[in-house]
Image (cartoon, rainbow, N blue to C red):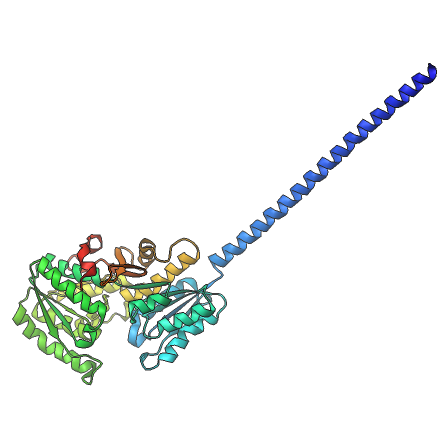
Length: 430
């Protein structure tokens, strides 16, 4: 009996030891698992933070932008806009290049100038303004070796179907809406006639020939007379001096023919200065230039020096407006308050930054307008997708934009053109 009690006591002690040992093992296992899970979680969190920091650095400030424009002598506003963007972000991040003045005859040089920017491993966007002949081929070559680079064309000279086949975005002045709105503005200012001045080479361009059709139709809508006058092409033997002399000579005749309530529009930059000069002298209206800017034609026509105001468009407009008013041109002469070429170079580059940072969509018109507005404070923008007149199909990456028209006076004022809804029928008129 005594032996049985000893055996029972021994078995009880062994059972208690077993239970305690088992509990101890379970506790150790839990602690080990918890520690391993915590360490893995901390490592994962640290990895995610590192990756996020890397992504932020890449998208935030560790990428480069390239801008290609014409020279100061040929496209000063375009170049100054590129320089303004470079001044904002720094020369270490923004590379500027210039295509040849005679780009049509130096096509290979033009192409190579654009393509060379893609050799920079940090390059993430290349903007060409104006996108002259050769830009499409340059973009194709860039996309073949660097599909990650955004290729953006400003005011393309090439066929819309060509440039949009290679560019992520093509942005042009809205020849459709402006064709309607320029006439509408002239009508609101009291004009009864509209005179379009050009030459055969320009009229062979789709955008310009379509715009003429739109202007004719709009004149019918507003009860105005539409007329066309032909002036010499400055690229022919007469050159710029001969073309300008023709305008100087014929404006007085046109004013006599069409009256002082007639508005005038020319498709060539070289014609703009003499046209403004003579309209200030003899009467008539000038709503805005083909590529509007207070620097387009006005300084030469008014005989004013704007070197001290260079780059300050508020000051430029103020000085130009004062000179127009002094010559009795109040409420007859208009422009875009901010240079189209300047705004396009800087604004498209700004848009590229927003797209790279994931803040904007490449073809969203509101996002594009937001970027342009940074370099044109106070001026409203609007636009639409380019519509193929034959098929009626809108092109996603071909955007047409325009800035509200500013009429100089005492005081001057915007016409609210950016808020006008252009009738749908005009978008397929040709």
